Length: 149
Image (cartoon, rainbow, N blue to C red):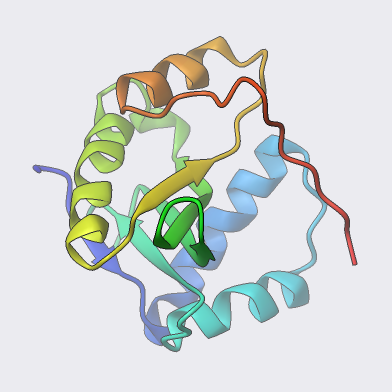
């Protein structure tokens, strides 16, 4: 893989938070700084529930990916969920997301992950094409449902 991935640590918070804020603004998510802080800080402190990787140069990353961990009886053990993946608009279309989505699951599998899931808007044909090329398949008889607590 030519695109560098760096496991985000506490001293990466400002860089990661800036990217997350940019993604949330672009996607129309209304998140406050304190909510992002509460969500990101545990990941940077080594929470067993997930990880955040910075994409690109460590000092000036061009994106990030967050993987959250769970457990699946169906898949036979630990699974993961691509919670967010983001690249700055200026670097999109260069194959960087494809590289990340092809390499990272291999590394996670070697660490014991049995399956990786993600959510995508059904009508976002560009994203669906990207994820399909990376080996993700829709589960036709399933849909993700959520309940905010």
